[in-house]
Length: 351
Ligand SMILES: NCc1[nH]cc(CCC(=O)O)c1CC(=O)O
Ligand SMILES: [Mg+2]
Image (cartoon, rainbow, N blue to C red; front, side, top):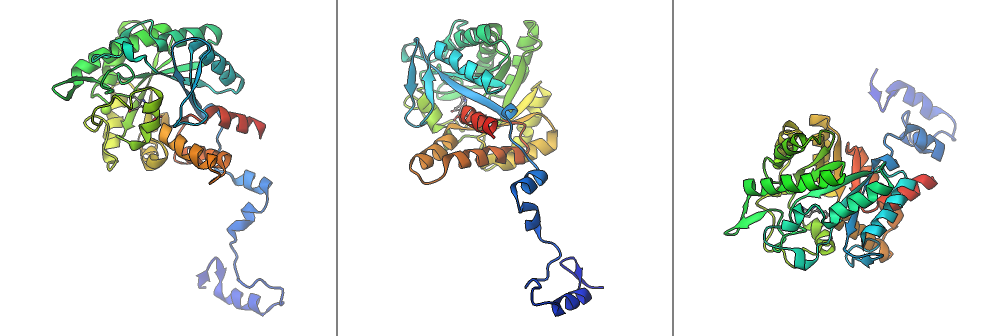
């Protein structure tokens, strides 16, 4: 019997002959049945976003009782350490498992070598200690890279206009150690130097910090979507040139797999793809290939686009936020770093 759309042709003729009430289209399969009501949609839903999927990035600034708006990231502020502790409390109440910390470094503390990065009493280390003291049960992730601390805004050391890989890695290991010693749970190298994951793992192990995890920014692309972040940490104005000799070319995906493979071999516990939404294909390939805990960073520019369009009344900000976050789950991500974390958590918990 010839089958078309699931029903034998012969039977289709019979069905046609019937009542005038018969459907105009003779369809056995009607996918809309599973969408007919909210309960039915919930029943067949494949992916779900929970508060466990969220990592909340915070920007830090020196001082006390201070909150500073970031003009290119409406709704996001730079926080003094005491205010960051208040946000940690909010994260605990919202059951967000982990915070990520990024410092705005005073210009007077920035130099060519990013020396402040390895100061055990720098802003990030102060914040880690303060948060851990009050809320030991929240996870803290610290970025490892020199850009918040260098006068030139690059993630590594420079000589004759070139980024020095191996010399930079030596500094990154020291940066990771001061953060881990302050109580950081997850070290997240975002610098894209070759070999830094292995060197940091060795440094941590040698210091007896065996339980400190590494989340490698494994496939990190040279992206225009980092613009607002560079405003937030104050490196936008000082950055000379671009980061294309260390961050990846946005045309490549095979290369992402090779980068991820290396970082896993060097000891990464978790891997990350960054930016997020424009690179969901990479998230999917990485997850399918390595079956590792895989994260995506919905970066500042992605946040800014949605926040700006919502602010102008051009799209429904809350729905766009939730849809964008669910997209990461659909692509295979185990979690998302997102500036929407508190808002999304509030919405999830209200459901
Ligand atoms: N290496 C630092 C770093 N860590 C996270 C981001 C971007 C995050 C965002 O845009 O939200 C950057 C910026 C950059 O590489 O220039
Ligand atoms: Mg690499």
